[in-house]
Image (cartoon, rainbow, N blue to C red; front, side, top):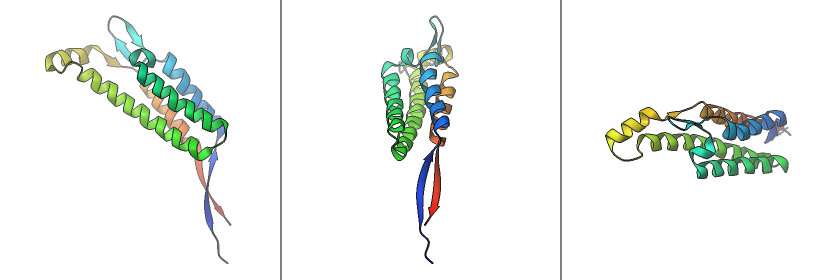
Length: 139
């Protein structure tokens, strides 16, 4: 007898919805930067284009979730995870190299701090990625 294996993906919907909801709410309500005089900033106040692209990736994930394209949802979730990590590194380097002068950049990096909103956003992206499970089917 000859057996063939096909790979199939299963989407765990409650976990995916939890990840999407936490990602959407964290980008609006969680603090991402601590600015000395102005206080805590969310993702929109940190960088508008970063916020809009993040919401675009999240919107693509929701679209593929709604039309039940599991493979495309998986790619969009991986893209969202990569984008959040890229956004964190971009904000970190922007804080540490804003003016190009070592003295001023050192003072700026000591006063502006990253907050816990980045951890929540990245963990929600990890939850979205882990909601898709690979299953081998034997025929």
